[in-house]
Image 1 (cartoon, rainbow, N blue to C red):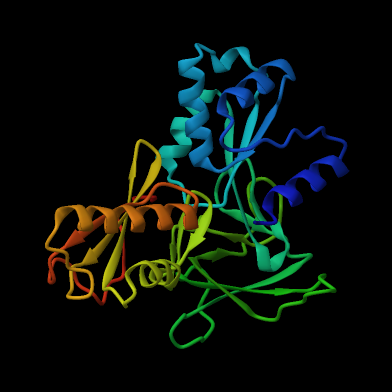
Image 2: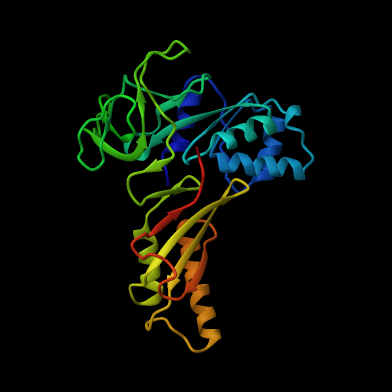
Length: 293
């Protein structure tokens, strides 16, 4: 459970907007609601926006006949190519947003119509960019880890919170007229955590499931790719004496159990493959081949 949807809903209602929360799995219903209620703004992950586009095509719904004017997309990295595709297909303006559960969810930074970085809410946060290895502050414009200090939170204040997200910061006034510092769009991290379909996943999560099912400590690698705007996850597991089966039926049941438990744990389909030792570098637990920039 994340704080993002609730924060967006409460914030939108506070300024007088009507909000219709919907499950990500009810694509046809979402298209009908956007049409019937003349929705003007779509807030979602970019992955969901692409899925809605495909759903509209299946339903023969022309986005130009809807009332949509803009889209706010976040919770996962997305490229300029994806932005161009969403804007061209849905005939809207697509902007980025940045937030995290530890810092009250959405609202840490928002992209303005200039689309030249995300404005940090400096009335609530003090941003810094540091070297993730030395922890020393970096000069403006240098790529480093974003560190944030909350100055308005009361129940759960954070001082120099390391986000793990890599970006650059620009303190020059923006062409839109705002003077709050901007951070570049975030496409990478300084650790093994990966963002897939709006959810954070770590190798340790995968390891726990693999260990529970196999009864050992299997050597594995997570491979992430993106096809037609959808993230695909493949987990390679080395064959060892612990889970080597001379019967294909037992091996198939083992792979099916891994697939079922991993998919249930993460919330989406995960492909599992057993491979020979030496197939991959065990020191590299994550291979993210997605292209965002």
